Image (cartoon, rainbow, N blue to C red; front, side, top):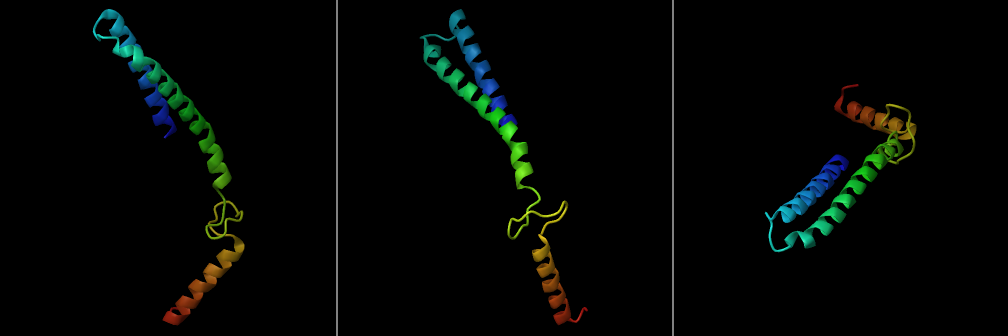
Length: 104
């Protein structure tokens, strides 16, 4: 999403530059670009800033949110999905189900 916002902002800046050139050369008449260009430049700069902000915050958010238990959110060891308590409970539940089916 960060890359998309940045590219969209660059496209808006390019369109506003084209509108200025088209207005000066007479391709677009009636001064329509005078109202559109400032808005397009502001929105384009806003999209670029938002895209860059998301680009910086996304890796930080992933680092903070990883290595958490799926059930309770406590910190877990690397490569684990559950904390030790929930891992033990899940294994006990699985063993109980297997015993009821007669597998174990």
